[in-house]
Length: 373
Image (cartoon, rainbow, N blue to C red; front, side):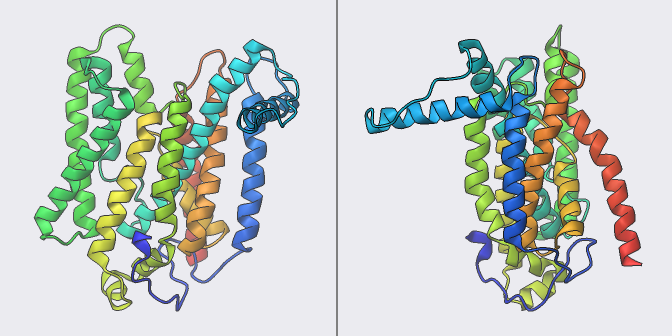
């Protein structure tokens, strides 16, 4: 638990966001149980949605068939395997097409929501989002290098490498201007500079190299798309979420101390500079892995934490896990809409998250202003 080191005593209810401090609605267990049920139902329904006529009952039956078959292989015939209700083609549509896409969407949504909440706490800035440090621009540059320049690297690997390179440049620039101490304002400015630099190089590459349908591939990446998700994408997104996301979630109490400012957090026993370095590095690792399989998807990491603060609590012990569940459900349904609303064509999911997220963020802003009045 890297972020949980030197955790201060929870003496009060800190509130880094627009939420009134100390207000908590419902127990964490109830929220997580409700979100778990909603996520399971959403998964089955979303997988059933599509041009092929397959019911949720058939999907559950097929899942049970595959699970029993796997147990039979492990236990050596001691398990009765029911018949698969799906045909061979329907089975391929579900388990090689829709299922990995839906699982990837949920994992990416959960990870972006966690990353957004952590960034807003570490930067003490309610407008901070997972892409603040130039991570998205670096990942995009890596992807464009593969799509247009023919760099012989797998696209997720190139995107992940670009994200990490952008983070390293941002932290180096921020550290060079403030010594070894990272301040929120300097880090944000460094992230903006790196993002603009990467964007300029990306635009130059697109302008000079894109031909034919390559524009469509690049545009899809820039706007975010889960259309190419496979079980490898599931492994990357779920692996990053399970390893890095879990570490971030366990640091909720430490993140609460940042709401009082660096000086107060230090007096509470928090190693501010070290925690900020570690936190930003973990966020970059998580977001880099997610962007490598989904492209740049905005507003999930910005809006979801604010909505959860208003609905549940601003304490990060609650905020982080509930944001993960809400973010998973939000992106799962956004991607389902993206692939069905103008079928047979698909919208980049980033268009829908921006179209939904912008008015929702405006409403949350107005509500928080009335609450603070």
